Image (tube, rainbow, N blue to C red; front, side):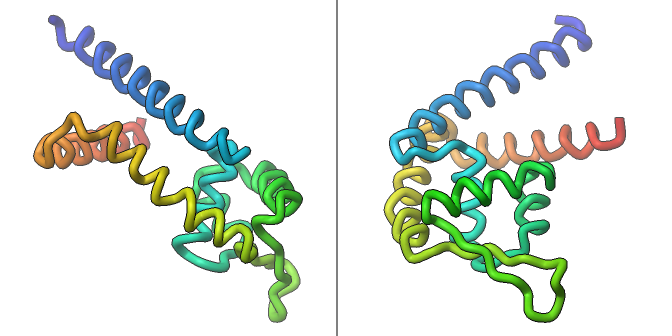
Length: 144
C-alpha cells in the first residue's frame, strides 16, 4: 500500500473507531439522561472539585458560548450549582450538588468499566503504543 493510502487508511480507521467508541459511551450515558458533554463536565468536577466556568470549557474542549448552556442544563437537573467569586465578579465557580456527587459516585465506576471493556482487546504494550502514537499525530496536527 502506498504511503498516502496508508495515511488515509489510518485516518479512516481512527475516525471510525472513535465514532464507534463514542456511540457505545453515548448509549451508556443515555440511561442517566446525560449527553457526553454534560457527563464530561460532571466528570471534570467530580475529579477536580469546584472550578471556574472558563476552566471547565477549556479543559473539556467546549466553546465558551456552549459551556454556559451545558451548565444551565446541569443546574436545571440539580447536579451542579454556581457560586460567584467573592474577589472577582467576572469569575463564577461551578460545583457538584450533593445529588450530582451521588450520581457520579454511582455512574463513574460503571462508565470506567465500560471503557475498560472496550479496550480489553489490547494488551498493555499495545495501549502504550497507541497512546504514544496518537499523541505524536495529535501534536503534529497542531502545526499543520
